[in-house]
Length: 250
Image 1 (cartoon, rainbow, N blue to C red):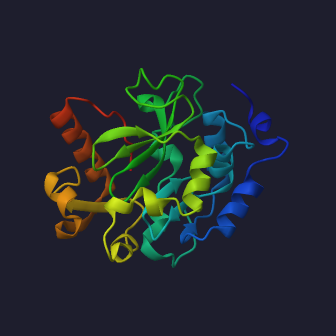
Image 2: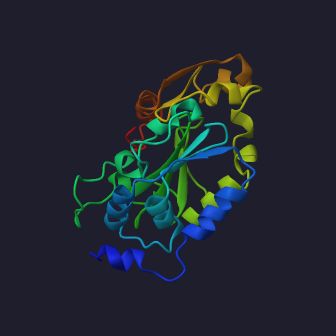
Image 3: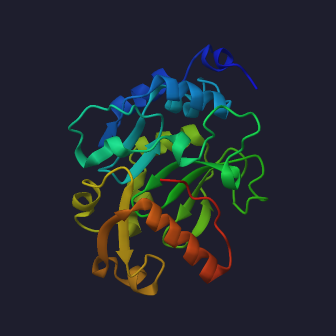
């Protein structure tokens, strides 16, 4: 296991580029302040360097609540974030918490399900970074690529990009087309006020024929994101007899 200094003292760290991408993005967002100690511990557990965008995110950023609260990108948030942020975003969990990191850095620890959960959306969609053997974990795509657990199919989908390209895509308004069939007029008024641990429960369920036929007729309410993820895993098992695996702890 590499020492922390080996991970932080690198040429061309990613944070200046990532910070510029956040500053110049046209997407609405809240960028949360970082807990430096948590960021260093997370970086050391991940064993990635600050030259990577993943390393820059966990080391220098508390996380990002993107596109009127629709997408949450996890970092290392400070407990005492400034008051007054809309939507209760200071409740956003850390990447370490979402992935059940050990209390102390453990060289033997590996992410559950063979991949690292790096983001969620309000519908219970999950963005995860593939580990070294996605096929063994029952996930598509190649090692080091981002995959998405889709709430309207209850299946993992390969996005065919790495973590840096995924972040650049999100910050470049990539969500507009990606969520085109899963958004309704006025969705911002529903996603914006949610806290960092809430999502939107949709009935009839998004994978049902009724919801696919008429999304506007669905009923939506704020609910704990943990409850939505648990429901998705249960129905994935019941309908397809396939366990989607770990979807993150929130």
